[in-house]
Length: 91
Image (cartoon, rainbow, N blue to C red):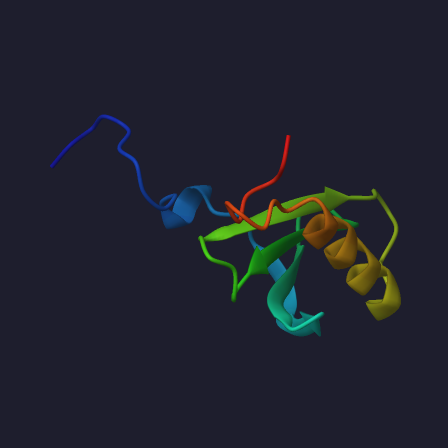
């Protein structure tokens, strides 16, 4: 067994805990899983499920629970920054 950090997924004890069930949202034909962090109200993790790479983003607005239209707007803002040639954030 290795005691040194290795690339890959975070071990469960280091993964954030989430509140409630994830929400699946489709925006402009792209699917995202949105989860709210239990230990940090107003912090969300977005996983791009249909992207060309395992990719996503986080968003924190402390103490503010986002509505579905707000979540969709943040997803659109993210997609607007993606370089269509690479599937990653553009320069």
